Length: 286
Length: 305
Image (cartoon, rainbow over all chains, first blue to last red; front, side, top):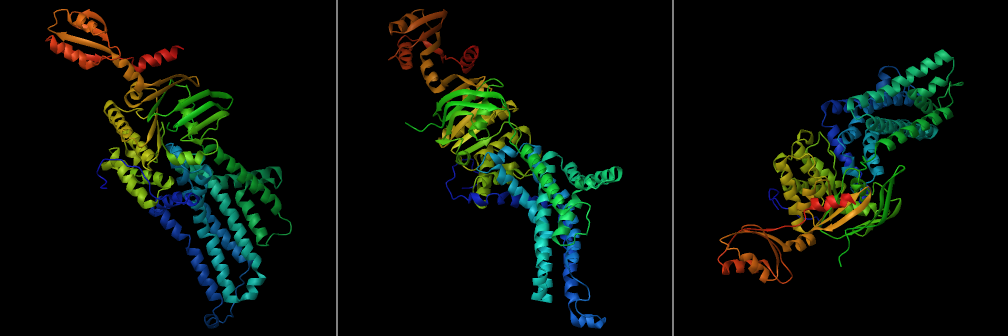
């Protein structure tokens, strides 16, 4: 039927699987995100360091090239510390990406009350949060988890199975550190976006959580001569967890990895409560 | 007998500590049902309960045979909902918004796109479908909300205050659309409004709520039919005996002014008998009105209870 014909007919065609319906949100969200040239350039720039690292790993094992400068393959040590440093760099970029992308996910839906349009369909609140969260999750994973695992795989293939077997814990460290960072950043992005419906302010709040936490934490540590202030420093907490997973924990850390885990889990629960409170269909008891 | 569209049995809903709906009992089967009531009567809470946003604290509510407590997902798959308040994504073009709504209801992307175009043309936004919703006027936003509510071909469409904030022309357009949708006969409509005229012009059944209770149920179609018997006539060329002639037919009759007659037609007497009588007596019928209780009369009576 030609679209200009002003008639209405019912729909009796096939339906998509309800299991994967949350991916609809991802498709529309990605389209909106990458419509911004600024975000697209920023996202592409996040792959600059991983590409350099791949070249570096290759050169570090290239005997003929290294011979020209009088070095042997593996002259620079690639160990857990190297991967940890790489993860730290990429996690900072992931934080910035969260601040720019996160607020655009939920805030526009809440600003003009679009939530009932989603939730009056065979689509649950959980699916909504999952769909929106996976947008941020896949972007963060693409600049942290996947590049790190790729680097780990390249290094293993260049050096050999023995290195892989000996350093398998690095793979575990990469996986669990990145997953932790992803979960925290997703919840932070979504909750700030739901808490403040103005995108710019929500983005600033994401960064402020890191900056303010660090600042307050330092003040508490300085004034009260304690290390309890570190519990407010989200960046420090995540770093402590990653350090532990990469088996890099110093002898006497200011807070134990276990305490860091507990603090991060508490923080995530608080963010979940905030999301649960804010992402409700507006009710008018008329 | 057809399955009720909405079936409520002793439905109670509490929000916080306040009981909003207090023991509603209803069976609605009409193609278009109007929910009427003053502010705070519980109209929106009832709609939100039917959509599964609120759980009943007592009693049951069934929509198209499904229980709202256990089958909310199935109910939502069959429903199109046009919310009362703003419900749009400002920087999204209408076509994407309606298409996304269709996809969330389960339509494959291609079918959703086709249906989005059709729905927007249907509600009269064809030429503006690529414009961002944030740039729409209030009337256009209402139409876009209607388009997203019908895009997936629902069996039941719930319209919450569809003419809210519309200027007279836009209101007429919306009412006409609802009447057209009713005429299609393929979907049931529940229209929630505090504007009696909207309900009167579009609905077959009306339920009046007050303080969370049903205070009146009215089958408007039947009432229209029953009140048809009351007729007001204005004549020209009547020598004063036309009223007597009508009475001889068996009608109760009263002359209110020269040439103005009010009569009640009993069973077996049709309006054509009046025409015939006038023709036989060479009387011109200048005006002939059926008078009936308006919904306003019904509503005001219900509010007095």
